[in-house]
Every structure is written in C-alpha cells, then in structure tokens.
Image 1 (cartoon, helix red, strand yellow):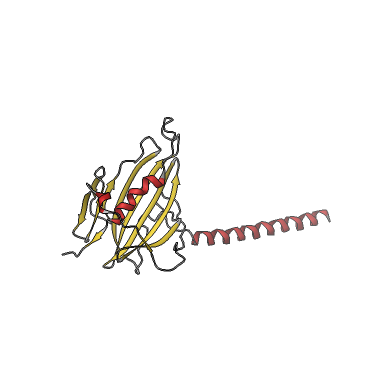
Image 2: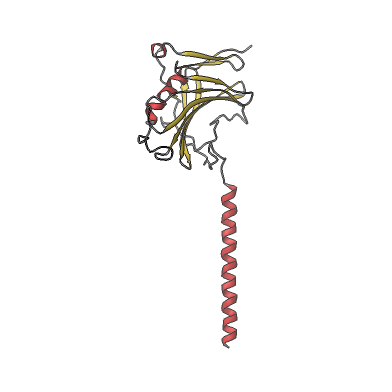
Length: 226
C-alpha cells in the first residue's frame, strides 16, 4: 500500500514538472517572437510608440536660429543628395567611405573635464522601406515627435542606452527625400564616473552639450540635385 502511494506521488510530481516546463517553453517562445532590433551598443531596443508634444495636432515648429548666431561657422554641402548644413569652427568634418553613412562631424565638449568621451553628428542616407524613415542607429528610443523645419517635416527621436561602463545619448532627425531616408543622428558618448579615471568627477550636462545640435539642424537647407 505504501509503495503504491509513493508511485502515485512520484507520478503526480512528474506531471507537475512537465506542465511547468511546457508553460515556461510557451512563455519563452512568445518572448523571443517579440524581441526588437539590436541597438547602438548591441542592446535590445524596444519599439517606441510615436507621440507628439502638442497632443497629436500639427507638427511642432522648430526654432529658427538667427544667422548672427552662426557667424563664422562653416558649411557642409552634399551635391549628390542635395542638402547642406552649418557647423561650428571648432568641429572636424570627416568624410566617410561609401555606405549608408555619408559624413561625420566631431565636436569638442562645451564643458571640459566631464565624463563625456565623444560628441558627434553622423548623416546617413538609406533607401526607404514602405515609406518609413526613422532612427538611423536603431537604438533605444524614449521619445518620438514630428517637428517642422520650414516646409519640411522631420521625425525627431531621442533616447539613451548603456553598456558596461558606458552610456550613449542619441538624438536623430529623419525625413524622406525622393524616396530615400535622410537622417541626421547626433550622439553623446560618455563613460560612467570612475570607469576610466578617478580624476573625472563631473557628469556632463546633456542639455548644454546638445545645444549645438539644435543650431545645426535648424541650419539645414535642401536644393535640387543634378
């Protein structure tokens, strides 16, 4: 009698284990099917829901920068894709080899001595898929809005994502031009305090370091290509 009860008990335990294993397998399968794209640092970037600051009405107007504020700035012009923008004299323009990325512009930090490692703009041109045009980095997006620059609309996406000892803040502006997606992607790459040097004790100010991005995107001009 005792032996038979033990057999029933073991059978019951085995059935519970099988049921739990099946439930976990179903959960894991559903989770994997919804894994989003890999982001800037190889992290999983969740799909962001598009929102607008003004409650879903017309696109937000972008501030137009007074030309006097950009006095002494250089001009980058791309005849192949028909666009130009201005950049500060302290920036370094780096042409890139053929590919989606067209040009990179490196900027010095506005405030030295912080944990900001690099700060740059990367302009990319990609073929639009089904009329979609968005974040060129495929990174974690926290906020999406539509902004207007003159007669042109841009999708503005901001976010941040981290890796071991590092943090990337991204801000991108994308617009469709002749069936292609033109994106201006700004990146702030910082290290966690103490990750590199004990002498760096100040966090960088994202608002201060991002101010130049607003001036550059407001200076963008489009023109006809040959």
